[in-house]
Length: 585
Image (tube, rainbow, N blue to C red; front, side, top):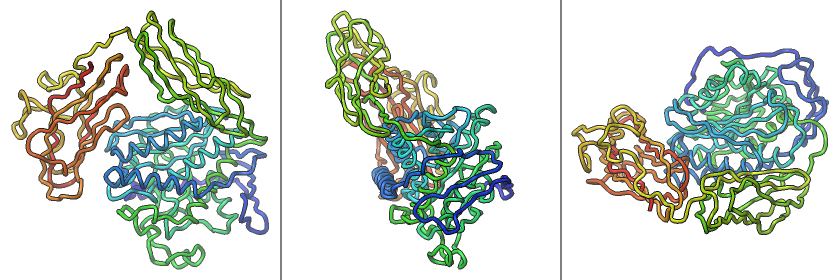
């Protein structure tokens, strides 16, 4: 959750006319039924029972996020290597489950990086119920309660939905936001990207930010609204007596949806505000202590989460999702198909392979026959084995004859069982010995102006404060001794059919930081969506040091090479880059 309120006077969106009927005694083991007379989000008349969400599975996701932070400088701040790895983890699980997944680059974010949007392909496209949580954390720690708990709760709910594959009465869309901690920037960018028609399709947005606070409470955004009714009904069935999320008003990603006129609600368990004696009496915990004593601190680890609070939030999300978007009936047998990797290059007279992975997404496992279409003349595709039981995998071999048609095509891999599912692979066929080779970076020494680079103002410079390695110009990121983010990037087409691909640049790091242990200022190097390396003030040294990377994985692709420098509020660190090359041979 963002650290300070955006607006002190946000009006609550309260809807009337909904009646929730509960049993005389609280139900503690299963969700209760809710009916509504008039509402902006209509629950189906008959729904399947909502599933129990395994809190152990949610905690396993938390462990992954904690490990990602530990391996990437101790945090998952937007734009960092830790954030990129977090997004990759969530995206890979969703794609394997059969979601339609996209990344949205937030160019106006403080730390430019990607939102992740996943949509389950069922239900009417103009009737959308949306569930969101911010994926980023602060730089002070791994950000597990704030907000790996919300992210993990939605991820596990998404996977369970895919696994059960029920009949859908509405389209369900999940979102994991970037740059929330810097001002709700990722969700604002998304909302602003929607036109009026697209905004009208979203019948409700539900936000989940800090849903496992260790001294937590049970708070609901706009608790008396019709939109909140299914969330409240579930917690009411447990006798929790939830309250309005006063502390979180205007401080999380529901804000810009609400401002756009989209009905909103969500769960929260509390941040730095203190639990009252009355709340401790009904919920347990410690009165006059913060709901989350590790809020925005290094101790916000997996130890800083209440499994009980987390479990009740995860099950409440499932109950609301099923009430709002799931119809009656028995789930059908279904499966998903994925290809890894999704792009391959082969020369005439040679062959290449990829893995075809299937998964049972609903019902029972079934036999799946594999086939391919779209191969160019002279290219044959075979599978070993040619039929698998869903949950199994096969090896796809693509063989190009000496006279195969060259170029890039999309090959569709189809699995046929009780239903048909498909995935695609981009194949590039090159002529024998057809490597174009050479240097593919434009203006790598920065001596001919800025093109084809795109850079923050003043980055490409001949200023005397830092010398170029060769010539007069270089790229000088940061070095101001104040909070600042600067970027340098260009689009690069990597030729196919070569034996080696080496990215190289010379880097000089100069710093006024005095620490020998803390990375305050960072330079991230990315190709496409992959972070190759992160450097910091801890890597400072006299003179330039050459850095090299094997980028053969990008053969035949057009990708963006990006340098992103971030500097904190004091003591400058300069990241000076010169003589950038990508040699293919």
